[in-house]
Amino acid sequence: MLRIAKAIRPLPAGERCTEFRGWPDLVKIYDAQVSLTPESAAMPALPLRLGVNVDHVATLRNARGGERPDPVRAALLAIEAGADGITAHLREDRRHIRDADMARLKAEIGRPLNFEMAATDDMLRISLATKPHAVCLVPERREELTTEGGLDVVGQHNALAPFIAKLGDGGIRVSLFIAADPRQIEMAAKLRAPVVELHTGAWCDAVVDGHAEKAEAEWQRIVAGARLAKAAGLEVHAGHGLDYATAETISARPEIAELNIGYFMIGEAIFVGLAETVRAMRAAMDRGRGKSGSKAGSKS
Ligand code: PXP
Figure (cartoon, helix red, strand yellow):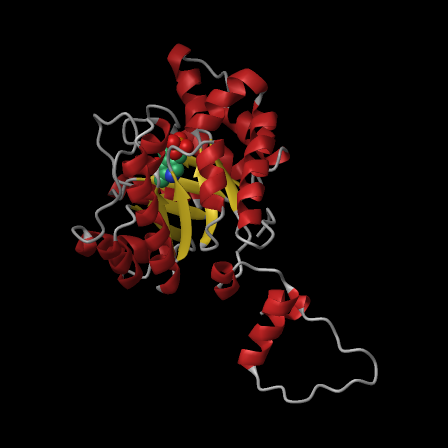
């Protein structure tokens, strides 16, 4: 409503507004004044946030033991360069982020912390004590290299319902990391999670591997999933495997409010530095958002 109000110019002095019929007219005036593509005219793009995942700074640190490089230092640098928040995954095996990192991130970054974790009692206890801005529930298997699939919220409905409620009661926003599958999205809405993060890994892998047909099919799943989730009242985030090109593409989807990106950015940082990487990612997202017909805006 605020965006609409801002977009409407006052009438010149002395002119009276005649024949104003309420909401349909308001939408017409808005569409006429802001140049939008037909699709985004139906839904102006939201501001798009960048969450930088610092897990792999900790991976590097843990390779040699000791304290360097420090993921909290990386988080502060990323924020200074334009990140809107920081994401970190406390895995059961503590292969990268450790409990003390999470506590320091919460204490030191002064921006939203998105705490990724499996839905276990141990993680529930730690997250309630840490009090991050958000918890993103992810599936976790010890033998996997990274989070390979989405959470099966359909199959785990009964276990997840009280878990989500406890986090919500603790003042923590819950996000469910799921595949862009209609059944999973509908169940996420039924579970009353405020946010879903759509798993972009299969799409990104297909793009990078040059499998055009698979990439297109995965992309269409993401587009449809983002629309469905938004229509179901969920805030829509996306992440996994994104690079500059795929981040730019997905930023054009007006339903998406946040991207969480880690591995590619930490890898790029080796060559050009983290601040430069964050700025380049922000620019890619802004270019993509520009294609949705509305300004990106980095803050929420
Ligand atoms: N979102 C979620 C839920 C994740 O588990 C991960 C990986 O930790 C990411 C985003 C970031 O993925 P990547 O490191 O491939 O950018």
